[in-house]
Amino acid sequence: MKHTLDSVREIIANRSVEHIRECDIEKIIQYLVIQSFTGSGKSVSVMKAIDEAGYTWMYFAPFHDIIKENLEYSKLRNYDFIHMKGKDQEGVCFADEYKEYLKMGVSITPFCETRCTYRHEGCPYYETKDLIESFPLSWAGVHSHIPTYLQTFLFNKKYEQRKTFLGF
Picture 1 (spheres, rainbow, N blue to C red):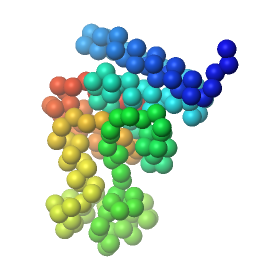
Picture 2: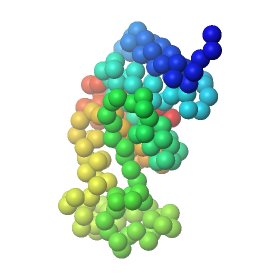
Picture 3: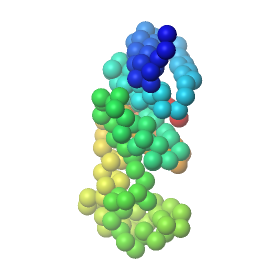
């Protein structure tokens, strides 16, 4: 039987949903390894399965473009999530005086925490961070978010009450 791209994506999605629904998350750590070609719908299908099973997820990719390509623009996605964008992304940082540092690859977090006037007045970065911290939501970020935010969310009591899957 010859499969089309859509039929392969459907198979991945259906089997992922079945596996996640059947595993007993409370008793054992489960692994789901899917190996398939690029564009087959692995990431978005597994996120869909996790969402349908009533769990939250955190997905980390090397670059924001991959998150957009794999999750935001996917025709298979029928669930909501928050994309935790970095301060260097268009429209995220309003503080012009710090944007030059971002272009040089310098972290401006110390400035944001202590000196930025937008920190508590409409900063998209901190509004998103605060929203994610306030209650369990599925969200995606880049690898550079792992050291800063992964521990924050893993030890957040609200996330402990709801099982959360990690994807890299």
